[in-house]
Image 1: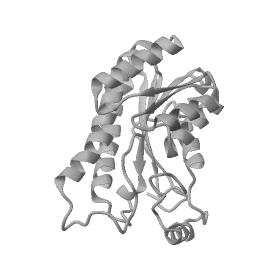
Image 2: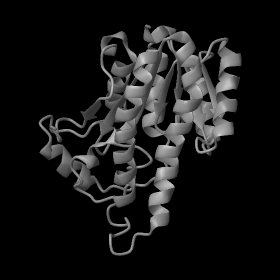
Image 3: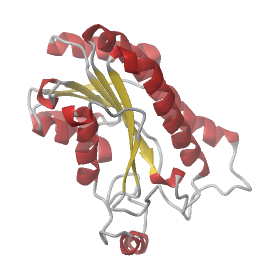
Image 4: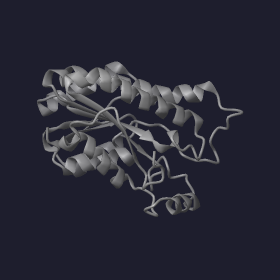
Length: 252
C-alpha cells in the first residue's frame, strides 16, 4: 500500500519527533491522526497547519479504552480504519546531570517508563490489529533508542523500557506477520532539538556530532524520513528489524 493511501496514527504526535513524523506522512499524502495526551494546543495548531487530511485526537495510550475510542473516532472521521501506527509516546527529559543514579533510582521510575513505552505500545498494537487483519495489511513502527547498543549516558529506566520495546518488536513481528502486518523499530540517538532533549547542553550536542561519520547530530526531520521507509512499499519484506538512525554513531 502506498503511503498516500494509508491512515497513520502517531502517538505523542504533537511535539518533537512525533510532530516531525506527522508532517512527513502528511507531506506524502497520508491521512494522519495526531494523538496527544496533554499537549492540546500544540496538537490543534499542527492539525490546523496541515489541513483536513490531519486530525488531532486526545487519548492516554496507557488506557486501552481510551485508545479504542480514539481509533473508532478516527475510523468514523476518515471512513476507514487505521493502517499504520507509530508508537512514539514518551514522557522523559534527557538531562544527564539531573538523571537518577543507579545507587538511588527507584522501581517507580522504571515502572513509569514501562507503563508508557510498553503498555502504551501494546494497547495501540492490540487495538489496531483487528482492522489490519481484516485488510490483510498493517504497519507498526516503534520508536527506540541507540542507548540500548551504546549507553553513553546511563538513563537506566528509559533505556530498559526501550530495550523491552525492541524485544516486543521482534516477538510481535512473528505473530503478526502471517496477517500481513510488519513490525519494525527506528532507533535514534540524541536529536537536535526536541522538547525531550532541550535540557541537553550545546557542548554535548557538539561532542556527539564530532563522533559521527556525518559530523552532525540527527534532526527530528531526518529521523522521520527513516520512519517513512518502514511504512513504504520498499520495506514490504522487512519485519522484526531495528534501524539505527544517528548519523553513523552506532554501527551494530
